[in-house]
Length: 152
Image 1 (spheres, rainbow, N blue to C red):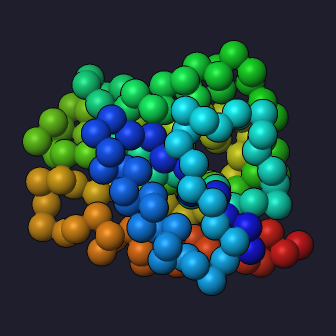
Image 2 (tube, helix red, strand yellow):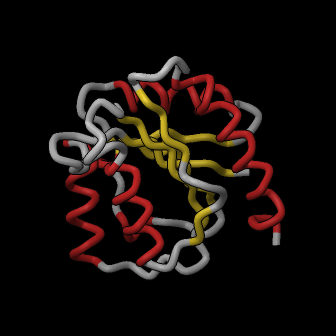
């Protein structure tokens, strides 16, 4: 199965996690790409998209995801047939904006017609879990859900 791990990061944590997820899913054909380098008109329905993003400031997308967000708005692509999942990273010490980066990307994708697989998972930097401990089982579960959907 082809999997693209797309990440949006401010400080590099989401990038490191995206790379780790890519390595963890090594039995598949996996690419890892910064959202700043991804054209929203380039989504391929034959590929599963795993989006890993942090949140920045007052609940905005992180710096590397902002160009993607702007391009999504400008291009308004039809993402019918595209499957994706979102892993958000944040800190519950900021409850008003906790994990809004992931929430915003989820909404953008759904509004463009893409199908979300599973629930958005959120990692809390103030919690006890390491991001990898949540992300690896999440990625495996999404891949298991996606296999029949993408094989059809």
